[in-house]
Length: 349
Ligand code: NAI
Image (cartoon, rainbow, N blue to C red; front, side, top):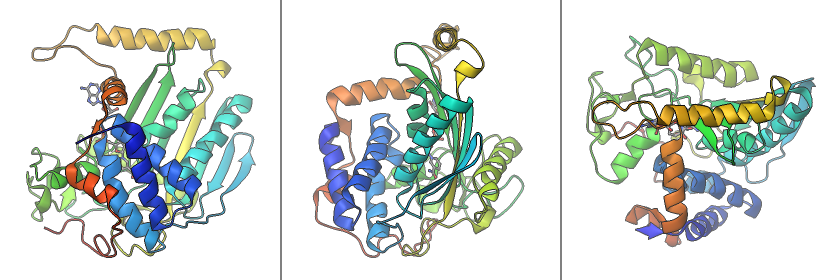
């Protein structure tokens, strides 16, 4: 059903508060989830509330965290999230990174001990709105077969990038290093839809189109995607002294436990490299150039990364967001699950 963005945000916030999250943090999480749904990334929007609420209710997300921020060098810092809501910690850490990059030209902030932080484009766009370039990477549960392997080792370890253009527009690239994010499998399950070949494998390592039959996900571009997810795990896990590789916590094992995940924000201030106005003009030029590339047969237009999401955002802002009926019914209900996710094998049929 179509839901207006302000109504969706209130519903999500209320449910997160009912599960035990303090108001400010419920607001922060709902903001990031709404960002995803607005941009058509439904895998990381309202659909996740049911799971978060169960984890919050069970104590697996610290509802009273003490965030600490320690500058460790002229352009480096560590933000400790005390296993509170990852969305809120990652947002505050990005605010700090932006402040640092204003002064020092570049800032690298490690975000330690957080729960899932959602769609990473939210954080890099924070920086782009302040005229900064940003990269953000984070760990995710081990559910991907490394190239040539028959068991999962890395997570879907996403990489996000944003750079500011003119008139408040920015170019945003944000992807899981798997062919598809795990949330897309969940989204297919929620709609009882099949998935395309090449997203995931079954228990025999063969590609499957049944989202309920998924045993592990596949990295993008074989060994190249596998290499990228390795890089993300080193930058956001090993570097921050956190569990890494297949020791990274699972979303679905013991929801009363903290996740101890890591994320890394890198912010670059263009003013330390070039003229800011020229930089923004050239980003806009990049967007225009890409839009004017001759389209291949079967395509109307080449779009720049993030453009389709920006179109969806505009449409959803005006007309409302299409939310799966069951998800809406859950959000509007008084239900907080006690055992819908805990210790459930995500790959179970
Ligand atoms: P996706 O496959 O929908 O898009 C990936 C990128 O390709 C985007 O930048 C998009 O703008 C661009 N793109 C897509 N179609 C395009 C086209 N036709 N022309 C030009 N560019 C195009 O994204 P994916 O990989 O499914 O990730 C979804 C979300 O999941 C992301 O927000 C990511 O941060 C999040 N995620 C979060 C995780 C976590 O643990 N926090 C783990 C994995 C993913």
